[in-house]
Length: 78
Figure (tube, rainbow, N blue to C red):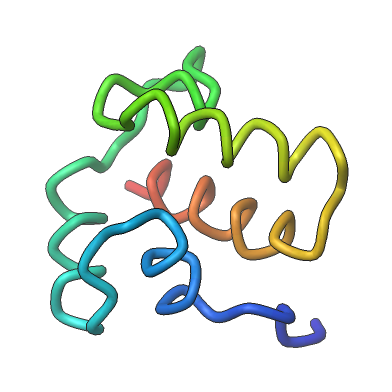
């Protein structure tokens, strides 16, 4: 699998969130598991701007889409 264009740290920075490795791990741990029927952008913990960004990146299959997909998978892990 190719490395995404953007790593998690850049995605979290883009979302206006702490982007150090420990903060990212804590975010994932505290929000896992995301309910199976909930789209990533519809999760209750996003601000409207964050949700919009996540939704648009996936819909446009933009260069952030791969790392957004990885975040989605990480939040659904058991």
